[in-house]
Image 1 (spheres, rainbow, N blue to C red):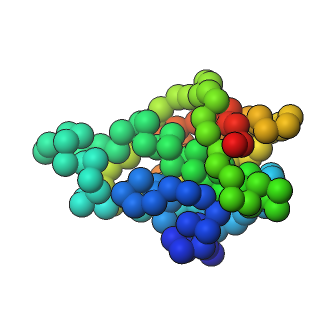
Image 2 (image 1 turned 60 degrees about the vertical axis):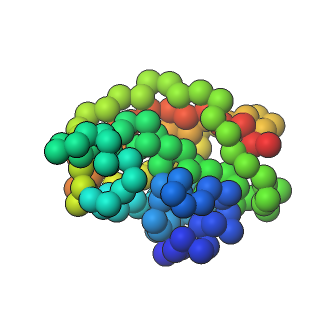
Length: 140
C-alpha cells in the first residue's frame, strides 16, 4: 500500500487537489488500483450540494485520472513528468458518491504510442460501478 507521501513522489498533485488517499497496487505502465475515502469535510461538499452532499462527477474522473497517472508516471522513463488529460470518452455515471463512501479506482492502460495513451477507468463503491469510461492522456 502506498500512502500520500509515496503518491506525492509519483504524481505532482497536492492537497487540496490530491484526490487519492492510497494505492493498493501499481504495475508501471500497465495499471493501478487506488482508493479515495469521501469525508464529510471535503472542500467541494460545502457547495455541492448544501444539505445533500454529493461528490461531483468531474472529481470522480479526476480521481481516476490521478490513479492512471500513478501507473504511467511510475515508469522509469516518466519519473518527474506529468500526465495531462487529452480526452474523456464513453464516461458514464451510474450512482451518486456521498460522504462515508470509499471509492475504489481502477485504471488499466489499453494502449500507448509515444507520449499519448488511453486507459480504461472504473470507479466502484462496495463493488457497484459508479463511473466508467476511457481517459486519454499525454505525458509531458
